[in-house]
Amino acid sequence: MKLIEHACEKGPGSTKALSKVPYLKLSEIAEEFLVGITHDRNMRLMIQHFEDNNMDCPCPGTDFWETSGLTR
Image (cartoon, rainbow, N blue to C red; front, side, top):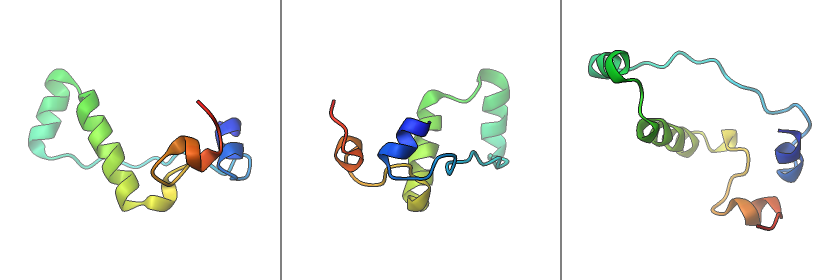
């Protein structure tokens, strides 16, 4: 995590996890109980979160490699 923070020019330890209670629809609660949350929904919710909260994104921009100055 420290490497990512350094690459994104953020202070060490500045990235913190948030403990938010997910508010799911009744149908999503039933699906979660029966089969678990899918990785597709997880990815969709993460992308939606970063679109709505751009400053939460560790490396904002269109390309992680370009933003961080790292190479592949």
